[in-house]
Length: 103
Image 1: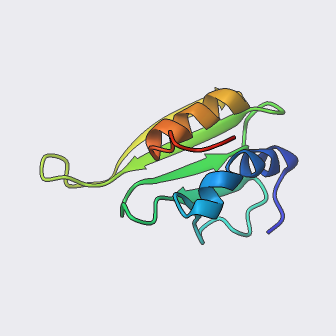
Image 2: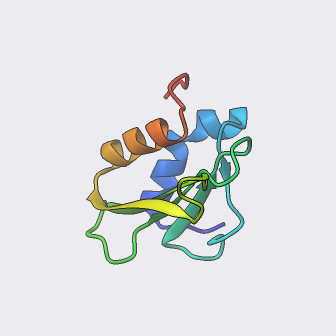
């Protein structure tokens, strides 16, 4: 899997939760050098699509996907762009409830 350096840096930040199985790399976007999919294995529908397409160097965009509920039966997502690494990492920690990780 070949990714832009900025995505490789993010993956290094996520080593602990990836190794612990708290989050996993999605099959989608594996061949896209500027995008990365993340999923929570034990929470279907909870995912994140991280991308560098259209972002300034060293900046990220992300779509945070949430599981459907009875009140909101369709796909629900929140989009953010122009995020620095620390802001993106903090969003992912909150989104995937990774508060018990060592970074």
